[in-house]
Length: 207
Image (cartoon, rainbow, N blue to C red; front, side, top):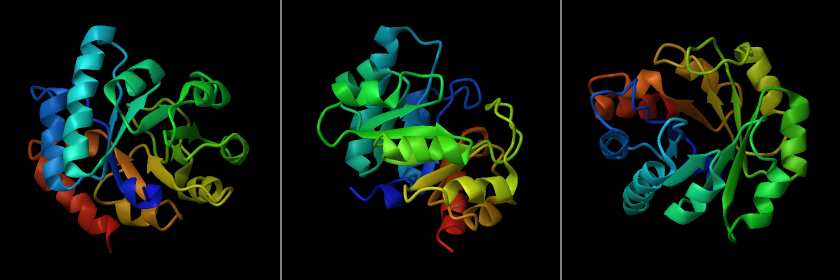
């Protein structure tokens, strides 16, 4: 799998932002619009419900040829048949996650500094999630801005996605920082036309 291509448009469905559509319904619309990667991230669902949701999302993504990643929960990622896992700096360590990961399992790591990015590469991460680029209600990290994002993206040879405060107006500028793709929540799933909004971002990324 070409990870750099697979993470071009990396979307995280959200039960609250995307309401009344549930996570599976949002996933269907995202895939219909051409999203190349979907991440399941939900801290409030029970383990049973999270696994049920992940399993259905994994099936849909595989049918569409899209990457499916589970945030934080290695057990759910493995049991659901996800392509991989995404972990933040406060989640389980990458070195420990790799001990239990199946062959060809993809693991992405959030990085806000060059040091975090280089350590992730050294420990065997497959891609980086860099951000927040701009202030956002869904990510508490201090904003890096375009210059900071470019600095982190250039610190390693890993593919990367930018996340945080991305919209149709600034997407093209963010792509110029050297990242391989954009990771979005509100700007897509918060729109009434998820499929149409997905296509608009794809057009920008493809320029």
